Length: 176
Image (cartoon, rainbow, N blue to C red; front, side, top):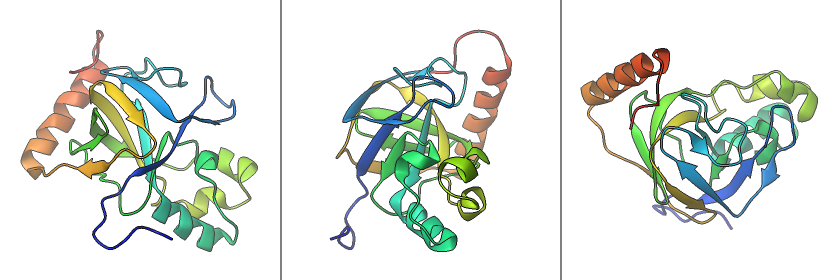
């Protein structure tokens, strides 16, 4: 049985990979650090690509387009939520468990998916591949945590996104 109407989205899967092209591993929880990302994931320590989030609804739609199910781990995203859209406006924020995230950009599906999921998977995921976030506040994420898009003012979000892009281009630690 799926989510009930009005029920908030929750984390249904967490995945990490210790290195590029290594298999994604399902985990019950992750520790997430401000400015560096998920401890133990291949992108930990990167400037901007700290956490990726996708929706089960998007995976279902991609599976319909493709004609075969698209497994959550097959997309190489870290967090899969039960339903609904994932905020994608640069500078907008979302909370997952204890962790505060800020949108960097829409996640683009990689052509590697055509080899790892099925031919045509990257095209099927076009517009459905989730969102790339940076970490604003550290904490723990656990399967079952709520996913909450925070209300935002478009001008404030745009200014946060501008500051974030500027910080990513300069040397030194990431923005808090």
